[in-house]
Length: 294
Ligand SMILES: [Zn+2]
Image: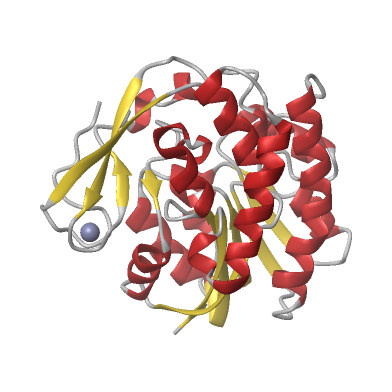
């Protein structure tokens, strides 16, 4: 285990323990979440060190990295994911007129393939060997391990996308510096992460599925994400919601809280979350942040 003594965003040494969450996916171990008193950033602390985190990803239920068709929840997740891919593409890569792109943490390559099929010069980086193989089998030719990041030419990528990935990265600062290095002038970076201030997070507290300890090392809100990226030379130009996320997260959170699915409640929470998000993005279950390189 690795114990942080400073806030990973603002380096403050003042933070409080705010929640103890359980790893419902793999080990049932408990992990503490701390909140920085200066910048409101939350982080899992202590956390598994980088060489010891593999076991927390060893689960058939960890569906982000697989294409398993088993189970109602996986099926629902996949239908939602397919629907979301075109929305993601239109609102980022297409809207910002990017030609070349890098999808960091591309998983099994669905978004990457969608972009390749639309004639983008697209590469994917992915830490999981199996996911990488599946992506290559789907026709994504350029899929590498994250080590490849430092080999990419400076100023060569128009847009970088991270779909629910930044919250998993141990080497946060060096990785963001590399993103800045490889982006073209005025290049775009798209970061989608869960939002711990959201309506559904408030509903479920420590059972909120998007805490997903200890795989999620960081838990952002608008203030902490903006601060992190400003310090690395990026300006926030847009935030967007992901409308399907609160339904899925509520379904899973309810399962953690009561040991059973409750689709009616999940639909209720999802609808209220989306309505509240219309008035304030801080209610959104997940937020897509779009930054420009300064
Ligand atoms: Zn802080």
